[in-house]
Length: 162
Image (cartoon, rainbow, N blue to C red):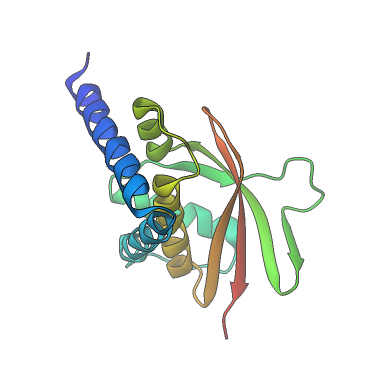
């Protein structure tokens, strides 16, 4: 086995084990703690990046900024069967995003731990924090629509802050 792949598997196993232990002992609060930790990292990860109010362009800026930090995370806007890419209601805008490559999902599968738990919440925090920096004056949230072995489909929800 390639030494880098072996090292990744070891880190993934450790991360999954840590998440499972934290969830067992901290309960539901582990999700919010993980989200906040991820959000802090996300805000810092794209510190000197460009900004945009266009969500598709913002996703590209975010992907490039994370790549510069050595984080390969493959995501893109996903229209699916909807008539519009971005929908708006109640002052909030919504767009589906498909996440194809995800280090968290890989870590969870390596350890055989459930998705939609604390590590997914940490990834949500990273994504939300970073996107809030790229799209100034917005509040960002992600909702998992479908989690799977090859990709996750999430709904990106954002609203402008005044």
